[in-house]
Length: 581
Picture 1 (cartoon, rainbow, N blue to C red):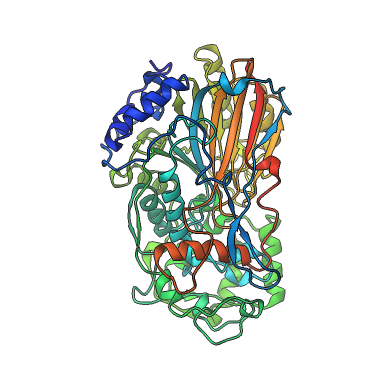
Picture 2 (cartoon, one colour):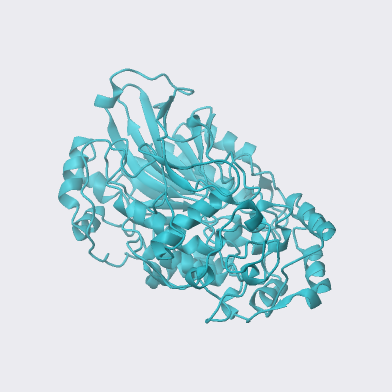
């Protein structure tokens, strides 16, 4: 019986029965000390109506032992050759590293382990409407994140990642059944209603046409004739072709072709990021100018270098959180903007619209309904919640975006007090282990600008959040993204696990497993996975799978892209030991 009762539960046994995996999962659960009651509560949300019945699908067989196939423990995409544009191929595996920063590793623990939780983290998917007039690609010379040559293929790339997770037979370290997927923010790129629709459809299943504006053709920087951007179908020797990027006839037509997503077979939960909440990922929402620009018919694609440098400095340093200077710039260069087809679907979404979209039954997929959010969150205009990970583990999802603007984060006083109450109540009663999820990392929560809706409320930094979490022995892990980099830090009695994005190379997701070693310690296993697309690309293959492979290869070759995002071996496939308290 679950220690925390719920008004509505998502019964994992029902889900496994529908997918044909119940027999294997039950046997595996007994082998790893996860009984039927724990399995049935593995994806219980704290409130909300019962989810729709899942659609029966064929699930992979669940092993009773650890495995490596389909993970970076078996192999990783790696470049071949040197200089210029480099092709990817099969590369050597990333081995598992044991980290004993917080507790000693005792011999024989592999034979004693009990699996407490097994799930997958997605982060920074950045599904991109590359044709939106609100994008600032013209800052590319200042920052590689302003425009990437792979961005037009983001939908195909995310669907391929979903296909990979659907094929995983369980947790790689224990073989325990995977219970859910958690996205830790920046699911969309530009706070666009259309991007949100693409994200929810990709996760829950359906068809996506990654196009906006003119339904018959692409209208964006890759057919602009500007040397600043890769022009895949033109003879122009643009800056990227000078680095070896290929000429690919049919690329743009293929990039806006309808993509089919099978949807996740697992229940999934959603955590919000700054690109989900703020126009451009950095400007305070609510200004009608953002809607007018995003849905309008003028798209600025180039800017004098000096002005671009000034705009980027303002963005980077948080000097223009309301976007006043940015608005003046767009107005001043309106005559230089390209004419494109207007599209109302590109409008920025509000917090309420974000919640309603998650609560739409059309996007329930395998559940839970709302994916962590309920009607109570809509009424209270809040984006943080708790959910039951398993019988012994509580999940907490935070909202670390600062509504006052800028891409770094913080949490408001009301949310921090709620977090403290939740942790205290758990330790007085259930004493479940706690996993915290957020978008921002402890290092990137340094923006304490007031929330315009709560001007007198204090905002709290990442260092303050670490103090709160460290004061509660039930907290075993804080899982986040934002930095687009694999990094794992030890904080007193818990681990902070930051995972690389799925838009910048090496394009990863992370499987996380919590186990009790029955020797006074717990272990958090983390295993990185790539999408299901082959490592090798074929420039003549513009199918959905071929585009997903190209998405990865282009991301590796993106000029000025960072080369440290994979992290070190201590940040990748690891066993993280900590004391059981």
